[in-house]
Image (tube, rainbow, N blue to C red; front, top):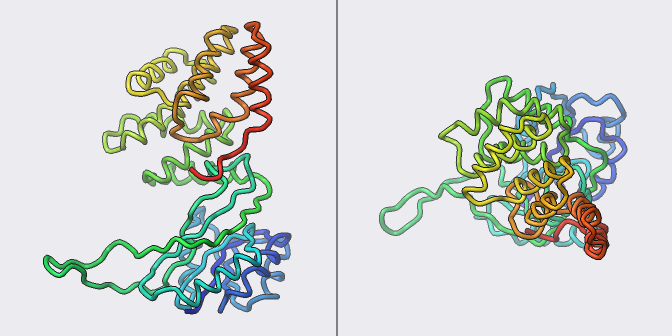
Length: 340
């Protein structure tokens, strides 16, 4: 089995060599697609491959990755970002997969290790992600009677771990890309709808939320959207309405959610509302529900450090110093779970 490593890059000179050094042992060809670098990225890439292509950036990561995939010639394609590194132990596991992978496998998933706990859309430190793809897919008939063509890919979950060593915050770029796509008339599918909500909740500022209001108001009224998407819309709008002072709209959404099954995000927003009103006893109850009694539908961060510190402050202001100290300790020790 042979592997094409395909990457899209822009201004990645400081990190690209470490990434490519870790990929050399498993790559039969390396394809670099540059989307407009102004530093030494292409010169660094040239130390590893002569297959370097320019691609005009059109605010579409899929288009750039499809272009990179179109240049691949090997059996499988491995997709990587410049801030990823594979250590020696996992290179050995990768080589085993490369040697022993059954030919019917079309996608290999690997464990993505997230070392950046802030400004990320991940909800755990370790998540399975599809990383290795058969370049040419063949179709086969299955079932001895009422035969049909297999449509679902054959997926193998490997033990390989990839270190994601992110530096800086790309959320502004990603949120802007969402806005441009929506402005062009693109309908966000269920996955992108969720990712947009996560970006806004974890890293969006007030301006980002205000600009997202029309999209999520339309989403909330869209009968073709799923219940999960409607819940995501209510959560985003509740935060936007609270921050903009739209109290009527805020409580209308929160009461609607409470009639179904309150989620951690809505309980958190209500807690923040009462905290801002200096009603600390009421805020305490809702923050407690957000952190300990309900499930998050967008991001687990809503049950994490910031709200724990706020809960501790509510306890302090209501005369419960012992609980305040406990929650401050929990806030200082909180981290993303290993898996979800």
